[in-house]
Length: 193
Image (tube, rainbow, N blue to C red; front, top):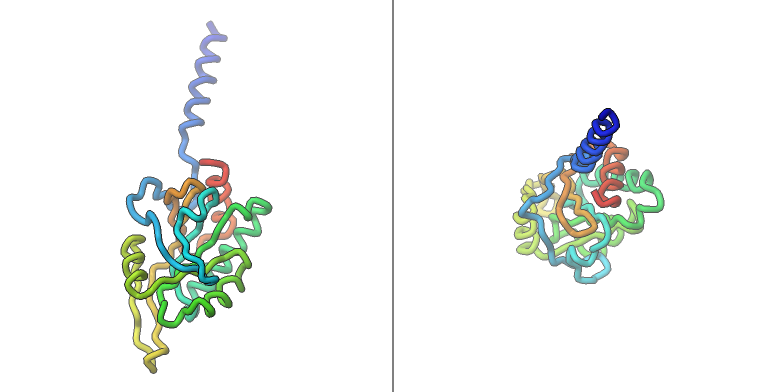
């Protein structure tokens, strides 16, 4: 009888462990019915959709190259997280989507984005596509006047979105999240969690 009770207990614990949520450090938004796709051009001039990166974990960040703080610190932090992932970092694609297509040309994105990591891609669309995509991803952005017409800044959302290798939106990473936590979450997604 003790053996049967022990087997039942082990089986119950095993089933419980298998049904446990993955334990992400970031905000789990699995099942979100938004942020499904995009149709943009990368900094090399190639048209891109989310499906182009199927099989990889995809991290998407919306920003602009003239950003003085949030954008460069986010890209640097993600670069550091990739360094902690090791060889599997080749199975991760980081996408920087500009909210400032008027100033962020493909040429500028090609200089700015890969400076953080050679595999990072900058994406852009026109003003209408940018507005539509920001709405689809629930990204806030608003131009703030500067001292000259071209010196404006842009207030914007600071989170990053993470898609699993099947192309499903899974995580929202808060700005300032530690690279170790981002790396741990990405490793879970790469492992199929």
